[in-house]
Image (cartoon, rainbow, N blue to C red):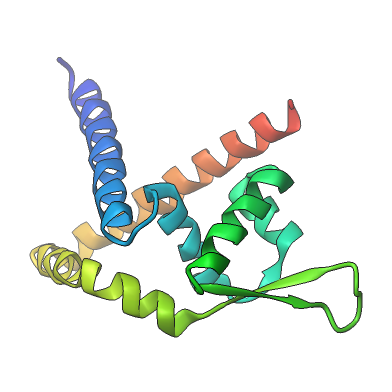
Length: 150
């Protein structure tokens, strides 16, 4: 097997293991792995309209509504009317509740990841950074292409 094939296989295994970990964390938090990852969008970006949330998740508006319903039932988000446009609903994440739910499930992972990164030289970290930035760019182009062809 060539070095390229080895890296491709390792990359796939990494992606699958990541999915398994997030599913396990999601279950422990009382939700699916994808639901708990969608909370990450809300934590990173803060409040947004339901339409914006639908656009960044790639979910249909109906699936987004169901997702928001599940989060609201767990009191992780609140729906608020937009002050400038009553037709819009703003999704407001309760970042303190979300952090209280998820932080204990990630602390050891975060510490172990930081310890792993500490074993790399500055040059190696720059290679990793370049890989992740370029890989995300490739994935975002693929997402855009798929979405344009629907």
